[in-house]
Amino acid sequence: MTGKSPKNLAASVRQRLMNIARAEGTDFQYLLTRYGLERLLYRLSKSPYADRFVLKGAMLFQLWTAAPYRPTRDLDLLATGTPSPSDFEEVFHNVCRHEVEDDGLTFDVQGIRAEAIKEEDEYQGIRIRGGATLGNIRIPLQVDIGFGDAVTPRPLEIEYPTLLAFPAPKLLAYNRETVVAEKFQAMVFLGMANSRMKDFFDVWSLAREFEFAGPALAEAIAATFQRRRTSIPDALPIALSDGFALDSQKNTQWHAFLRKGNLAEAPLPQVVALVRQFLMAPLEALRSDDPFSLHWKPGGPWRK
Image 1 (cartoon, helix red, strand yellow):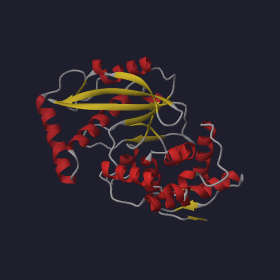
Image 2 (spheres, rainbow, N blue to C red; image 1 turned 45 degrees about the horizontal axis):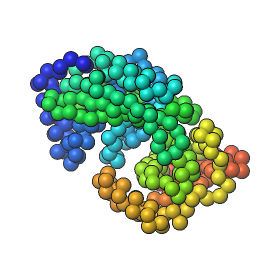
Image 3 (cartoon, rainbow, N blue to C red; image 1 turned 180 degrees about the vertical axis):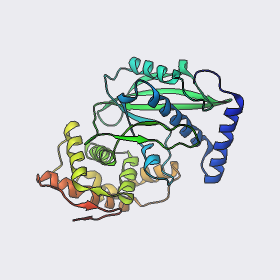
């Protein structure tokens, strides 16, 4: 809502979030950010723009598993349309003005700013910066929007889990196969220059915790590589090699990533080994233009 929220509701929300933080041993500031992003996502889902966006990124893991996952402080979306910062700034002005059930938050509509971004790979995007207040607490919020991709075979209709008893966002989201495919393409494209340790962590986590049907994963990989104009490699990608896994700089980046996210220790060579086992089988089938009909159980290996 754009009007001032009742002080007692904001105080109640703050106390309930504090209780969760204490019970779970979670950083309170992280929970505030997560709550702000969740309620922004709800406003988006209730707006006329909902069908232009697909949820992606680390927030998906809150949907897929009840277990704590790596913390994220931004919202990642795939969007349709031309990547114009001014247009999407106006979209989020309108989203944050959208009248919804009171949840204690007041969004700073006039403080929303959009800028063009370019990450390590070649794909343009837009970054939205803004914020909300919960009583007298300001919550900075960031939304990263990507363009030009598509979800194979199609996005999923989901209901996003909420921290508190407020209405849940209902919107489109990535499937796990496309998440894996996009992260794999980035690994291949960036090679030894890759510092995106979160991609290795995410694919490793997905391979450990979920089943995958070989045909669906192979289809997503093929479609993503084709869309991003990346050739299927005819040899082991550098990012999946022992040379990468044992490189001292990569291990320094990996351990820094784990420390920053307060994540359990896991040796990079062990992580890369499982990711290699998970990804190379469908890659080899695509390379030889063979059907890939195997099935992956959590933790592997691929079986008939």
